[in-house]
Length: 116
Image 1 (cartoon, rainbow, N blue to C red):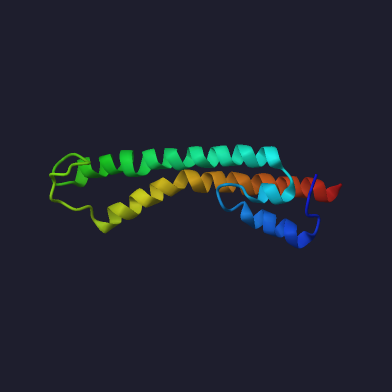
Image 2 (image 1 turned 180 degrees about the vertical axis):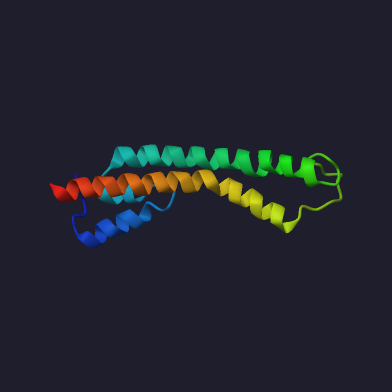
């Protein structure tokens, strides 16, 4: 099932799975896992977008904003830098979770195939 049996290519496939799309699955010949990982990555991107710039921004603006509500063109107050960093961090959390699941999954797969 493995396309690239060379150990260096397996390491490259392992490290490519730190990217949320799971490109390392393509190098190792696990096409179904790549499709599932790509689907979850797209889902994680949009759920992170909902959690970060929409929901978390609304919570921060309603608690710390000068206008008392978020997404207003008429509010003169600008978001502080720490709020923007928190919004980006919350946006990245689902993508990091998908990446960690990909890395753990391909590591287990490589350990299983290397013992055979």
